[in-house]
Image: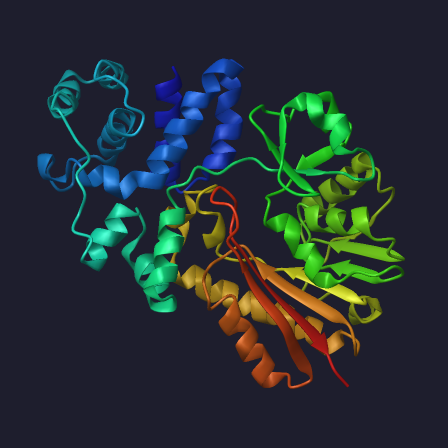
Length: 401
């Protein structure tokens, strides 16, 4: 049953363009909790290594072979090579197929003993296959980073992401959470070997889910008592909550253009004990300039290609196209232009993304500074801490007289 569900999800993601997280959220409900782990492992594992898995049997199938069979073979070989399951699991995969001829074809391939075959890493094609990246994406990253940095970024993809939690200082201290088997990482963030989502403490707002590096972005704002804070692209709201936890700011405005996401931010703020947060639902490119002008500190956590969260969302690499990045760059620049025109002198703006694409990060800021000489770049950061955390970029700017 678990393998059939994983197979269904992978076919929907790779053949129909659906998103793995949404499909798993829907389909895992059909299984008891103790059986959900294998589905999650198979879906995410195959997506992280899909091209490399295909490489293992590429000489054993004909061009044009039904892609559903390819996905099934990848699942079985993933279990054998990465999870070290015995070959008897092959029978379970073969049984998924209805047609006897199809079963015979798949079984013939799965009967072979295998060790992991690595492609020729001296070529771009081989490296892209090994890291299971589309060739265009591998070449883009190679062009943007030196070899040392590229190796760090690529090796990073092999790590399994962890769930990180952010303590809500308004409601709890680490002493209140000791019984949850937590590992404290810093004053704000922790992990646990347990799943804490359904604990009483989580449901009562003692902590919330937020990536370790994401939780550091708000510190770049240098929030002070009495500041007016504006979070322009706020969903799911965690960076707004970070600000509210630590600083007695006079006013906070959290904005997201999607009304449903905006409502979720408002509801979560209430659950965490922050009261009735002012949440607006407006396109950040068209938000009232008077609102921007009021703010002392502004955060633009911009829509981006998500290349910094490939460990957590491995299906991004199969959905993303070069033209998608071009569209995102136009969107990011439009949000920045509208904000820069309206922000007051002396205000601080932090622009952040969860991507490693320099066109959306450092080159974006460099181009903005060329056309806005009144803006000063105070600091740039690439967040690469902790192998199992997401990757972020931030640029801190201020408007001079």
